[in-house]
Image (cartoon, rainbow, N blue to C red):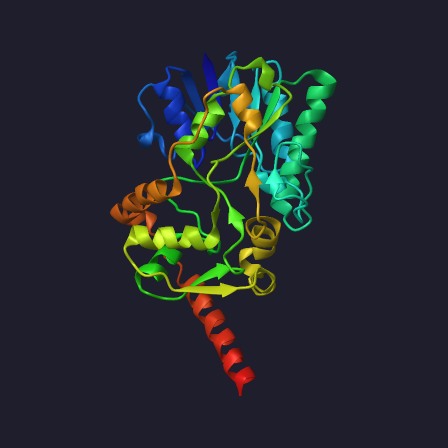
Length: 339
């Protein structure tokens, strides 16, 4: 089987690249080659800018594929480009959408592929919905062989899942924990959430590849483990062998004061919603599929790698200062209201 991954070295897709290589696929990656040294042996790299259709067509030549996986398509123009590039060139086009596209506010905490798509809070999610709609229209009208994949919060060995962070990911939050500082947790920390290690996601993603029953269908791929945000942060602290000092702040308030970090979308449109994902549809297509890395194990894998690699420890003094200012302001307000 021959596959092409557009991207293939990101937080989600690197695990899929490693899985396909280990399973003996003839695998090609179309990207700019920034992580080529980390790729498994035998993976073929096509170095090109996917936005340059002329260059991509020249590099692809007359190649055809059993599957094409798109990991960096965020707006309709990008999947429209893919449609032009890969129509007639692949037997299956797998598009990574997002579970954040599911209806907000949440109407039922149990999420299935049949849950309606609507998110007035986050442009990112609305763009994903628009991408899905374009692709499914092409499937219905022309038979374009699309499969939609909706991940939720997936993490890898370079980053850990936290409810609130700045522009540089989770390291500033990890550092606050290690320094014994107060760590902001959105809401009261009791809403339900699901985090999935990328190796587990890869197992679920590879299952529908090449399967005709997956064409024209959407699948969500998540862990079956459901945690509260308080449990997630406590598990991180335990893995770091430090005491957690939580500071709970209402998500609505964070959305108002954290516009620089787009918390309205990331929280109200996603992480503050209490959800549980039902993965029966995927399991009916991939018998025996189960996730194998519970969070208390996965976070230790990630933290060990992050702490061993200083280049992954991306500082963000502005976010740290913003957290301190927010906490200080709220504590001052409490003091004044008590007087």
